[in-house]
Length: 322
Image (cartoon, rainbow, N blue to C red; front, side):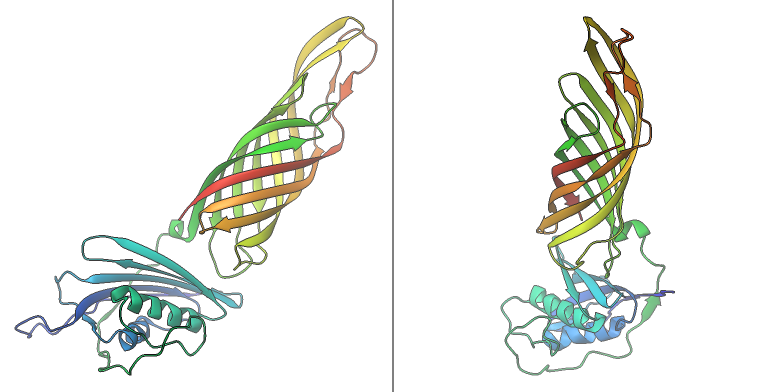
């Protein structure tokens, strides 16, 4: 069972000070899950690499850092948001083998965000490599007040996406049907290959005589490998919709609409650009759960019967909201 260790550290200078001390003030909020260093250690690493930083006074405008870290399954992921006193924000995400490695890298990023022109000490783990700097001129205080908070809203642990694609399916008509679809999805964030993706699609496709409109629910439980921009996802899906056909035979024709239910699976090859733009290539099989027949009503036999299975493919593009 994983236990979240959640702390917010408020860095405050002594109220007895008559004037603001020199240096750049900062505040830190910190949330971690797994075997990760605590907030005070993270603050110490930031100040070791950026000696000009100092804890902010109570209401003093200051540079703000918000850090989220997760370690599970032999890998760690960290996200750092830096907020300037005028409200501008920059976010960076780092992945590494351990939470210690990720904390070291994020501390280095925070130090550079505070002062991009200064040299900072390079991490010993090799997660991030920079030029070494002179030793720190002072140590961070070890009596900082620590307040325990509730874990962040679970919705913050997900990313959401919207996109579209061109697809084909060989089971919806006598010849393969081609069409367009839109997709909405949600992906769980974490530090292991278990990064579930849940999607809901609306697809319209067909050929000259058949039209297919279906809603598809998709579950892709894994992302392999998890930490690279090019990866694969094994996926399962269920379809529910309508298949409309116009059948002509022996001089007669008839329009029919039948309900459509199917299940199947596919493998998705996905490439991410800047963590927000997703290119997708799907290939798989579909199995009809309801095999209807379509005929012209002439009594000369069935013109078309939904086959037991077929192949499908899709090329898609989506945008992911962080």
